[in-house]
Structure formats: structure tokens, C-alpha cells
Image 1 (tube, helix red, strand yellow):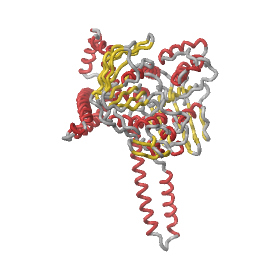
Image 2 (cartoon, one colour):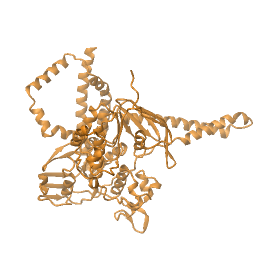
Image 3 (cartoon, rainbow, N blue to C red):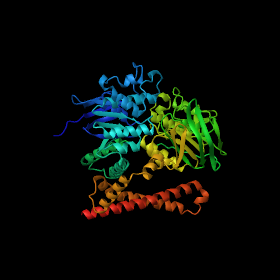
Image 4 (cartoon, helix red, strand yellow):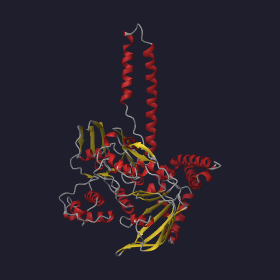
Length: 606
């Protein structure tokens, strides 16, 4: 017998400031649903989630939650007024005999219940809201950016908790790895329309591009029809005017349909311009040691950063990643050891606290009032990579409209603040970028663009992030801070670090004989024609498209490297392209071998 929906929205319409957010929206959340809620920043994801939670009331329509169903909502900016400590807030709806739930969650999220609300940071308050929701264990969880301000270890703990839960959940997140691991359905908000796909986030981008391609084709056909009908209207109306009035009205209707179509929001016109070429050696750290009181941040650490490197710094919150960045750039002095900076460095910093933004000043004032961007004698101009540009025009490059230019920065969302800070950084030539948690609050499309820009940037990048997918896409090396001063550098991104870290190597080299025998037994079973599992069947179906994609990437990289003067003209690009080609050729060989093995087994089964 089918179970009743946990939540049902019917005919929802909502307008803010004269602009429709949703019109006649209907959707259902079923028991066991694991839904990714995705869309560009500002499209209404958080608003829709608040409608689901009953916090925002729609202008029209109905929200139905069956009697007895519990719905919990974790918001980005929780209200903790009236509570003395974070723990008091998080346990406020828990029965006394279930207080153990909060203790278990607090340990996984690294959340201290004894922190006073008055002194708690925004990140601590959000962790308290997340801990409250998880401890209460409702039948439907509404999670708005739960991974923001969590370190990678806490994100992995949360991922495991949500994977094992029997509750349904709707999840807003920019963290690709998190979304891919957890979701089975996708709600996509695009220009006020909500589409649902019965598959998780993995594959969302391909679906989105297919939808947009179909939309563009339909629009193109409509434009051609309007053009043909307009030509008839000019040339064909004569004595039979009365008989043709229906066709004239039809043309007017076509034009109205075309004008009512909402243009897709473009991507931000972000760009980076390298400053003068730095020396080949950017940073040389030898025997670096630093501590505060009885806490050691780094002990006897060596690191050499070369021009063009992209170095990611990972580790638990509070381990000292930002401090290490400041040590490496000479902002603070070490207790022992030396840091030598290369020549001709021009440094740009994206700091996680957004301290370069004045929250009370307007976006306009934040740009024109920056002495590094100011244009002498022009209060409406900013200097962008050496050229004056109107401040509103530059803000539009970063997807801000003219109405926002005079609004205070404090009115912006987290993603909008991040885009504004990127606008300040990208206006200036630089050859060393310090990016301290730039991925927080950015939507997937802006993350894609930022990744592409960093890939083409000729300078050097030092990056702190908890986004595993972003690190994998960007980093050429990963510096892991394990605590107690232990800091180790590994080649590659996050996945490479996971495979190389000591505990993983110990597992591989010290596997017990029983485990080895189990592997041998499994291999023998496989070779004798064991049935493909569900996962293997899906993998077999997916591999051909992966092989095709890898082949196309190899062809593009080979064409690039075939340019005779590339090494002399752009040595950094030549090196990166060579590395990428070797990586993709290895991946292609491994994928082909995997496909052959699975295909042979499938054929044997018959």
C-alpha cells in the first residue's frame, strides 16, 4: 500500500517586490525522498524551502503536511535569542531522556554546546541549528547549506549520517561531492519554474544543458515563424483584410509569447589578469615552526611553491590553516625557521571573514571607496585591470543589477558577498592569489567559472577550502594539517591525498592474510562468471560515455600540445596540459580495462 506524501505544495504563487518568485507551483515530497534543490543564487531556493517549512506564507496555493508528520528546517541564519548557550538552543525541543542524541551529534559536528550565544560566531550558530535538527530526527529534514562552515571531517560525518537515516530530506548545497553521494532526485529552480528529475545530482549538468538546448531550439523556431508571419503581414494584407484578421491576431499572439519568455541569467563575467611574471620560486619555507601558548600550529615544516602551482590547504576547523597562509606570505613571523618570498610578487587576498567589505556601505561605495580601485576625479568610475569602467557596468559583470548598487552590503546573501569580494580582487593585476574559503555560498555555475579562471591563470594560487570536488578540480598539491603541528604536503588534490595519507597506505601494505584470501576468492568468483551487481550494471552502462568524453579531452589536449611555440610562449599552460594529457590517457586505459572485464562477464551471463 502506497504511503501518503510527507509534504504537498499545490498551486503556490509568491511575489517579492513586484517580481514573481513562483507561479502556480506544485510539488510533492514522498517518504524516503532524498532531493537536491538546485539553482542559481537568487533564484529562490531558500525561499521555497521556507515555504515548505511554513515560515514564509505564499500569496496563493496550499501547503499540506499530514497530521502526525514532523518537518524540521535548518536555516542559514538561525534566531537564537532567548537562549544562553548553543546547547540550550539545540536541546530546546528534546525530551530529557533523549539528551544523549545531542551529545552524539555535537561530537560528530565538532559543536560545543557550552559556547555562550552572545559570543558565538555565525558558523557556530549554524552548527547549533544543524545539531538541533539532527538530534530531533524529524521525518522530513529541510537542510539549507548544511556544509557551510563545516570542515571536511565534519562534512564526511554528516554525509554518513544522512546516508544512513530513514528520514526524507531536501538539501540545498553547493558541494558537488556531498550532493552526488546523497541525492536520488533533483528539483531545479530556473526563472520561477521548478522541474523535477528522478535522479540525483550526478548528471544534473547534462540534464540542464539538454533542457536549455531544447529551449533554444524552440525559441529559434518561434523566431523564424514570427519573421515569416511578419513578412506576410507587410506584403500579404490587401483587399481581403477582413479574412486575414485572425492571422494578424495570431502574429500578435506569437510576439506576445516571445516577449514573455524570460531570458536565462548569464554567468558572471569574471576574469583574472596576471601581474608581472613572478620569479620561478614563489615561496620557500624551511623548518617553519609556529605556536600560540601551548598550541602548536606547525612544526619543522618545509615547502617550496613554484610559479603556476595551485596548493590547497586542508584540515579541521581551528587547526591553523589561515595562520599558515599568513606565515607563508610573511604577514606574521614564525617562531623558528625561515620563509623566503620570490621576486615581483603582487598578492591578492580573498579572506574568509570578508573583511575588505564594509557591511554598512553600499556596493557602489565599497568599490569606488577602495583606494586601489578609485579613479581620480570620477566618483562613478572604478579602475579595472588598468582601465576605468563605470561602477554599475562592472557590478553587472558580477550579476548585480542597477538597483543593488546603492544597497548596503549587509543586505546581500552569502553568495552575493563572495561575488562582490571577487569583483574587488579581480579588478587588480596579481600573480599570487590567496583564496581562504572562496567556495562558501557560491552556486555551482559560479564555482565552475571560478575553476576555469583559476585553470587559465598564469600566476600561483594558495587555496583553503572544504569543498572536496573543487580541490580535486583545481589543486596540483595538497597540504594536510593534522593537528599538533603535523603538516604534510602531498601531490595532487583531495582524492590523491586520501589515497596517500599514512593510514590508507598502512591499510594497503598491512592487510591481514584473511583479507588477502578474501580478495583472491572474490577474484576467482568474478573470473568464473559471477552475476553483475546493480552497481556494476550501471557502471557498464555509464562507461561508454565516459570513454567518449576522455577520448575527446585527449584529442583537444593533443591538438593544444601540437602547437610548435606553446612551450616558449606559455610554459605554465604547456606543463599543465602535459600533466592533464598523461592523467587522462591513464584514466582512459583504466576505464577501457574495466569496461572489457564487465562486458565479458555480462556476455558470459548471457
